[in-house]
Amino acid sequence: MMIPELLESKKMTLYKLSKNSGVPYTTVNDIYHGRTSLDKCTAETVYRLSKELGLSMEELLAPYLRERANFELYKSNICHRLKELGDIDFIIKTLQKDDIGKLYRRKWYPESLYLLAMLDYISRENDVPLCTKYEALRSVKLEETLYPASVLAMVMVSGEEKIKEDALSQSIPEFLRHNIVESEVRNVI
Image (tube, rainbow, N blue to C red; front, side, top):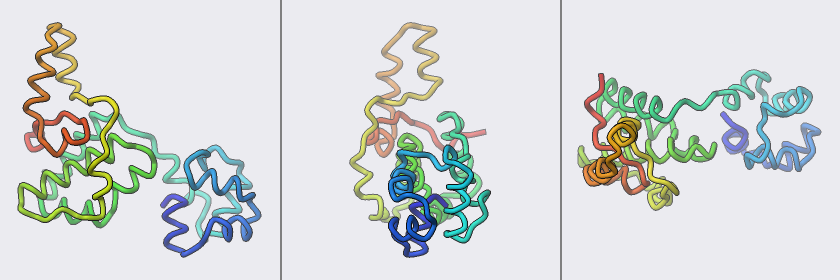
């Protein structure tokens, strides 16, 4: 878990974490709000925070050390997870793990919105009511439209911008809501 989730689960304030750990409040506040990454802090800061939170330094650092995967690989992994779990289990596990919220708090907006779009699409396909927890995120759009790499490659090779227009017109509405072009999530190998 990252610092915001840890504090929430322990019902601890930033002030209390700072005071009890001896780490300056400004540092704790910057880590909490993502202005400073915990993996860039001194070993002493990580040690003091981990001790106060009741975790090993490795456990505290683990979420901050995960590297961000290529977006195309991320999309593929989500589609494969859907295929492996099935629609209903995918919905349940995605909601239980709150990956959408975790990704959004990390400021990994394309991944977060892609997963939300997938959840909403699968919910619609199965007549499952939408989870209201993510209602505010449903109006969030990426600044630039994200096209699949295959569409961009075809445009580069052919020089035909119409390929983008066609992909846009065939996109699943739940994805398009976030400026993500996606037309096929089930046909994965």
